[in-house]
Image: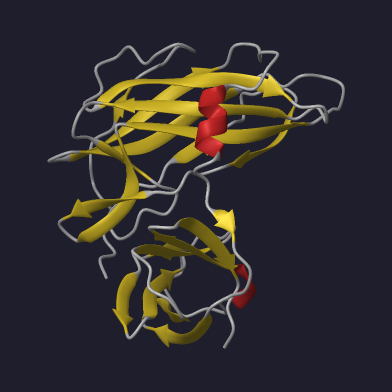
Length: 257
């Protein structure tokens, strides 16, 4: 598995709530869709990324050589936490195999929970993310949001429909140490077209999942490498599996073994 991070010079821009104006290669525009406020006081909104033809950006866990996006919400007001709702990713061919991400346009919904109930949330975020065509470049944007609307945004609702649904059960898996971390091999009793493994809420690099299907059974293998680059106690119940086929996308949590 490839461990080396991409060493690319940073291209920076500042984006207004409406669009990104600076000429970052591959980026046509980015903004916060202001969304709406729910009855419990939380706010549903989304970040919209518009890409130039032929360019791609990455999912939260892109694989061996992708650049996962990083979000900083610290300039927001009255914000307790943000929960991102990732639409199912697409396959992105790369020199190292297949990464996971999006073409053309990504609407990334999120729920913003206020720190103090009864008051609104003012949203501000900086995002560092990767863009790829024949080359890959990192980009940096700073965004603020307009006030929320009074009704749900159909664009955000459509993106929420693309979020993998939670599936019952969990795969069988075997976990063993490798030189710089742990290797997980999971077995599914059906074929899938695209898959990923992650370790929830952990700063652990995860390789792209190697996928093999034989006799209707799919085997997924991925490496998990912590910051200390050594074997570690990998908790089975925090493993997350995203599985995509022609029936749609599902997410499973935990594994048996």
